[in-house]
Amino acid sequence: MKFRAHLVLALALSALPARAQEVNDRARGAARQLAEDGVSALQAGDTNTAVDKLERAYQIVRLPTVGLWSARALVKAGRLVSASERYVDVTHWSGASGDVHAQDQAKAAAARERDELLPRIPSVTIGIDGAKASEVAVTLDGEPVLPALIGTAVPTDPKHHVVHGTRGTETAEEGFDVAEGQKASVTLKFGGAQAAVAAAPAAPAAPLPPATPPPAADTGTSKGPSFWNTQRVVGVTLGGAGIAAGVVSLVFTASALSKKSDADAFCKEGACTSQRGVDLLSDARSAGTVATITGIAGLALAGAGVVLFFTAPSTHREIALSPAYLTGGGGLVAGGTF
Image 1 (spheres, rainbow, N blue to C red):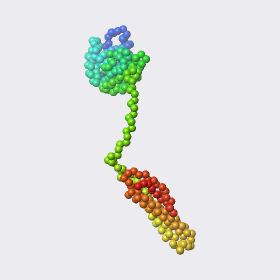
Image 2 (cartoon, one colour):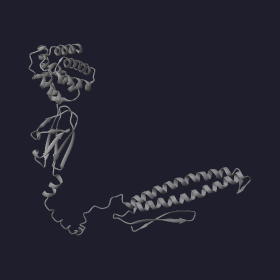
Image 3 (cartoon, helix red, strand yellow):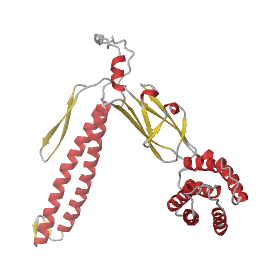
Image 4 (spheres, rainbow, N blue to C red):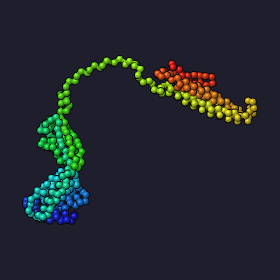
């Protein structure tokens, strides 16, 4: 295809008549080389170079064969609107010189490829709020948009665009992204803040807050407190703490008995024959003391928990916990009105 494209371009350009003085042999030769280089760049994937060279070649010799490849390069570059217009330009060519058959083939290909391209071209509908279209100078990506095109679909390329509008000293701007085949809508708003203030009616005075209604009388139908009220929760917590203290007491009791048993090998009736016996006997007494304290505390906590749980009232009561200090130990005392 590459060789055929070059051959067609070469034949078409070499057959050009001297239709204008500026298109002389030197210009035709340059256009031929630009066109061939552009086609080669397009087929190699260098789209920007292809667009540049084919565009310049087409400006020199406006033949369908060159215009067709120029349109194809524009499509590859994402410039779908310009490509569509180039296809139209090719199909409108009416010449009778040179390789007419090749030009007719290019015109037919351009018409076919444009029909395939049209569904891919996105569009944007630009609206204006707060002003007349004739009052606003609108640009799309820096290019002027005619007032007659406001409110109608304008073909555009698939990319990010910026719509800008100016009315006197007031400006508005909106950006948007559009992909192939999509239809976008953008509205430029003018006089927003001022118009809103002018149109807004005076706010009515805030109504006085309603008087606080009296408390509803107790009809006896209200739901009572949950079974798991505060007192029962405290009772279960104390009971759990008592059980834990009891377990600790049992552990230290077992340790005291074990150490006492080991100390009996060195001590008789409290008299020890070695330091090892003295240490074991001391450890046994210490463990026994801890066992006693935790045992008493465990019993106190468990007892308090049971009392609180089973004496929980049907209405809310205040419960207070306070520490109690006992000989050789301590605990918690729960108090309140039950």
